Image: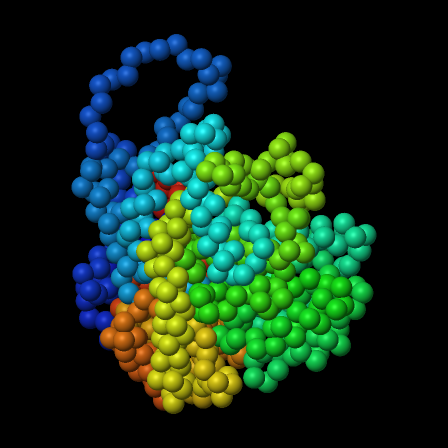
Length: 523
Ligand SMILES: *Cc1c(COP(=O)(O)O)cnc(C)c1O
């Protein structure tokens, strides 16, 4: 086998798994693709430029001495390279993306078209306010929708992702406590919480303590009440929670926390399951972030721009961050530190350089306006219906630990209970790749052994759900029967099983030119 400097196979695999009979070991019109540096050569180029004139250097001796080592390629080689790579990536535009907790839903093309309008896309945050009234109107409009849909008092649009929104909410809670001279030190977080919740609390300087879950997968109200006291700043509760269940005791939780002098933060990443049906403001919540990239269909993934506006109760609204857009008759203006005046003197300050993610706001506005209030209500209904269809269609082959707790919300949770000896959730996930699907979220939430969290979202048709259910069913049956071939999966993907820990911990991000004649040491 021919390997590159990082130990990747770049030539036909001679030792392909027994049931793969293609020359390269790959299938489905999928060619092996080397790094662009390996395809290129320094004596080739895709452009023809005239010789640069000799000019006197003004770099003061800092000029590069060695060649820059860019790969030389022709235009078709470059186009093919990146097109082939793009075909090796799974995407929401290719098929169902069952990642629970992530809400990978369709991004309507209308949103994209609106976000590219020059009046939104080609403006600068430092432009005079009179020249960007339309952009401010749009930010204000999205904020108003969020306040209405959540039944809260105020909104901060600037946080740039869910986790950033959590930080915003906790900073407001901390400011409110400091304003009354109350130095509480503990944030309570349920066992099933998304990892960002305890991380945010710790980042804000709080000690984090766990609240146990009941056998049916919800917050244990009695255990929570028993822990409340003068040292507890607040709780962070995800509703609907990461087991895919609605926290029915939310009002009682809020009442108890308020009675003990604390604040209630709600992780609203799962708002897509209740939008148009439940107003968090009615449940006593003080602050909640909303992931526009989950509930309101703006794209996400690959770490790329999200948006996590935070809504606040009356009690926390005065502490919300600056700047924000205020409407004054037909005119919009920014409330900044310099112009805030006494009215906003309690704001905890600024979170980001400017006003937030304009492109995401535009996409969310297009989504809200094109759906309307009735459409958003249907979104949550369909999301819950689709998840329950998945749950009930598979609970005869996969263990559904909270299946008896009633209908699920927007995601279906299974465990590895009942798989054959030696077979794990990982095997099921790898098997799904061979079936043509991106795997579901695995090993999260931690409260369930070998968790598989499936979120189909509302945009999947029954036909698409049936296709996915059929695929997962067949893989689950193989894992229960202990089919040894499943241990080799995936065999139809460009790569077999990788050392994922090594890939995450020791990523090879730098290509080094091989020393002449020999093969390069890994970078
Ligand atoms: C996605 C998610 C978050 C974090 O949101 P980001 O935008 O990825 O920072 C927090 N909590 C829950 C429950 C989530 O699903």
